[in-house]
Image 1 (cartoon, one colour):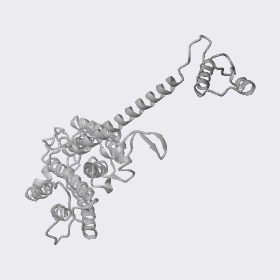
Image 2 (cartoon, rainbow, N blue to C red):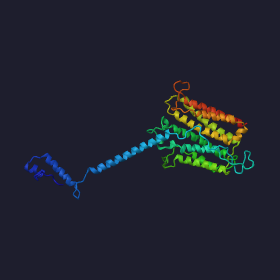
Image 3 (cartoon, helix red, strand yellow):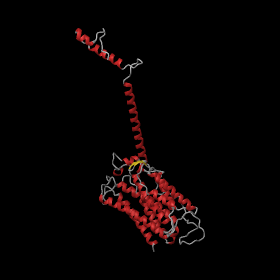
Image 4 (cartoon, rainbow, N blue to C red):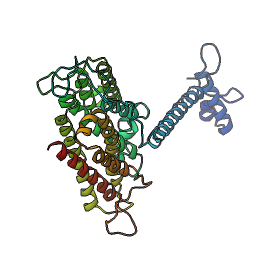
Length: 388
């Protein structure tokens, strides 16, 4: 290493030791700086800029951080938009089928005998089921499997907060009704008695709709990439429409018998009866009014269920119109439809779970449960008339 020297060429060490010259601090600093320049001078003779790489790394880190923050903001903005915007939400949604279903390979009639070949038509129940899947996952984003919904609010499940969970609960309620309907299509409605083969399209649709509602593109149990929930539901929609296309060409079976309708009505009544029990339990055990953060989940799940069953009942009225007319059930059926439609008028801005006798905070759960029980009573009455 070069030993720094003073301006007159005398080395610092010798000046101090040999001649007793007092050290000049400025001269020493200048000598040290000159030595540093020589030490860091490359072969080409140009001085190295020591701070440049550090500055470049700082700019790169700041840029990456800015991109990450902007990406997170964009992700939350999309999440907020997807959970607050309900596309094509309409309790009076139109049915795509306007004619009763018939079909069964050669014109199998209700009694199982072969008569003149009937004109085969689509099933309104199958069409409305496919349309509701389309409403859930195509016209709207499926909220329950979005990554920010799964992360929650600082680790807290969104269902335990009053924010961003109403649409997800509503969609799961709709899906609950669709799952029940596809099960009945496979087991009874699309079969001639119990010994006939189940339709493969309907079997696939039933299996896809039973898939977990919370799966994203990546998961940890098991670890690795996954097929997200909406992809399975879209496959179910395609299978349902494929069945109806075959039914329209008389290549599939839909058997609108009275005993099939009895069983279908039974399943719907039991399904909404279970939901009314959930509403009653929440209303009785918790009466925090506007501050019950789980009441909105119960309310909108039940609302979604009724939203779907209202369309399915109207579709069943078309598919089973001959049975309904023969048993003189038209007025009773329309009453059941009106009860469900009346429940869909309940659309509170904030769901309150107050005491039933309270005067300050209403009980929306009790109000919705009242409509559900009235609709269920009408369904039970329809079943009794059919079973006579």
